[in-house]
Length: 338
Image (cartoon, rainbow, N blue to C red; front, side, top):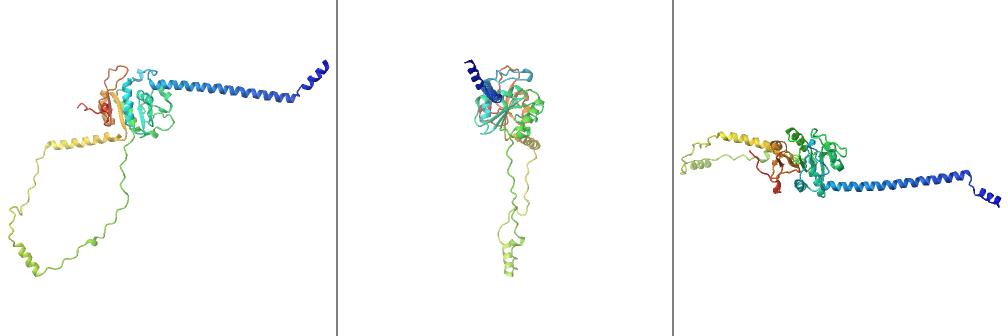
């Protein structure tokens, strides 16, 4: 019996080539199963990461507290009411499909993210790279290089020229040099006014020949015609007492103030033209009251009734300025101090 079993076991043994092929198949199957399991785990990790990212983004949409103010970067966040009013004013003045830029104003941008207006594009130009979490909506911006900001898609800064319908700007420092450089960026990005229609290039119709409308020569006068002219000259029509006397030309005495007024009017006209340079887009500036003359000169923006307020109490007096007259009474213009 023992011998028969040994013979049966010998019959069941696979030849070396078949056994090697089977082992290769089992090994490949195991590797495929391991790869699928790793892929499955990776997919779950990505899903968990996406969920975590979505949760973090939701937090960003509702609060700025996770971004601690960096005083070395002159960061002072708006309070909730200010951020809300700025965002709503921007949305109300941006057309459908338009673009909003928040320059050095991340608080207003985060409020726009929270509101999430439909069919309006909005981005932030900011030096603090923590805001890169917003991906394609983040432009790295250093006011010292007004036209050399980093774009999220690798495009050139010039490709964004004249793109934005509305710009909220809050320069980081209350210094004229800082505002002038920031204003250079604003002028680059702001949508330009529509160009007037060009005159028609259709050639004018040729003038008719000079002789086409010439009068026929008058017939020679007869003796009767001459007698008739004499009778008309001897008529009894009385002459006007002033006939033949030249009419005096009356002129008012020159007013020395007229020349000064005229000169001032021309000067104001030139200044108004400079204000209208960015008429195509709208600007809302938040900065210190001490910067008011610079704001007017650089972007033609006037003081409004709205007072921006910050979470931290600042000793500097802040004001808001627009280059347009808002329909919202909160942002209506007020007379500047003269």
